Image 1 (tube, rainbow, N blue to C red):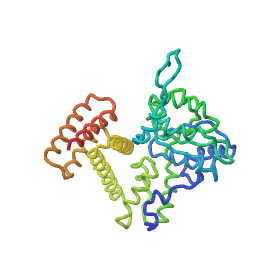
Image 2 (cartoon, one colour):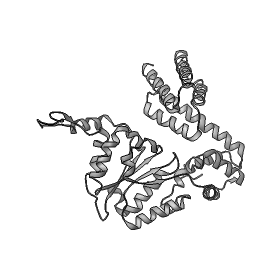
Image 3 (cartoon, rainbow, N blue to C red):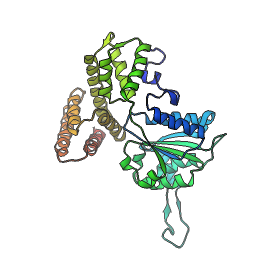
Image 4 (cartoon, rainbow, N blue to C red):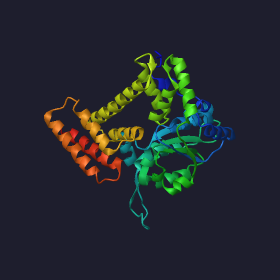
Length: 348
């Protein structure tokens, strides 16, 4: 294991588009855009962990060249604003002085996220010898009804800035946004490209793993390379040949650690962070709501909690499990439980 960069997924993170694992056709399309020096707004769609943000960032870096830092910004649509940012958004709101029409005397506001995170960047023209700035909006579906306001910005400031919107849920994106974007479907790499990348890491790190276990690694990680590299590094700690037993053992450890962290985050009262982690767990492991509840109950008994706290958490989990029988949306059922646990944490 490297002493300078102990985390393998960071050590082997691609630095150029040409270093992206697999997805040759996609990379060729993006490389052609870099040469042409022009592109419309883009919409990257794909499962979590497929490399959407990495590909978008490397594409922006190569398109903007030496002017990258001054003309690039990445924001998270699901990241809550700070108190200072909310205060700024309120101060930027204004009241119409018009005495006629439907807006007469009314307070006119732009959604706070757009007012604070988006407009200050896209209003200004690009610096240096580049045609426009590039803005990446990750988890774009989280904007919800504010997508209409975002659409207007795409039209008004399109000459100043092109936007790369990233989502795992295209169904949550409104049609006017989709119609204004060129769509790129991004999936995890195919097995052969995945195997080649893993073999490079095995060679560099001087570890051993048979090809049938590389296939197993691909299967249990669903081809998500960063997750596979994490699991490979975790499995390498024991030394010697990495076999299926070691992979499965570390996979289970990884799962239980994530669920334990989920509970700890809830007990700190951070609902948004807990919800994000729960969605990551569901995406990586495809658990049903009942399986998540069962793991949470198991990990809860390992935490140093009072009898009262244990009793209340068990009641919340049991109630969520009962309600989930009739529920259709797993995310809603789990989010409801997380919200109750976060509220409970505030009275502890």
